[in-house]
Length: 156
Figure 1 (cartoon, rainbow, N blue to C red):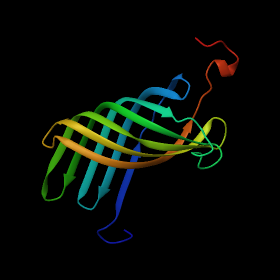
Figure 2: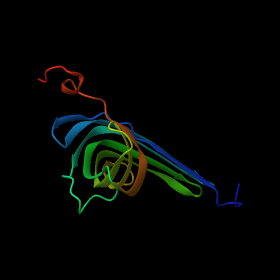
Figure 3: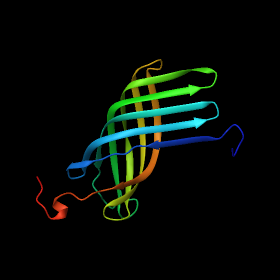
Figure 4: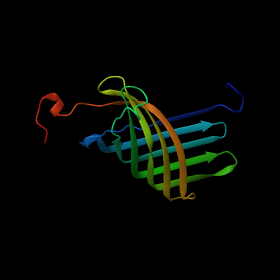
């Protein structure tokens, strides 16, 4: 405990696999697992669905750092959140999850990018709480695997 009664832990893991269906536009599946704990409080989030990401055209006016690209991302799928708080009945919401927000990719190599994504997530469905809302700032990295044309093969 760094501060008695005020120490918490939060971790979210959201692996995604995207495929570029055209220049600057990728789609694919994603999975969400999240845990948030503190004294007397636990929240567990989960989900499975798909996402789409569109990279904005690069221009000198919008480039924050050389090699960076802005993008927008949206997702939809099945989601759930279970919350337990000491002294209060537990809540849960299971149903449709949607999210959207802007992000920035900084390419440290041609295929690896550090990313930041500010995303609003909404869950609507069944349970004793019918909606959940989250604003999430995610920081991570992406690995872009070359396609067939980059490997010297014909594309389909």
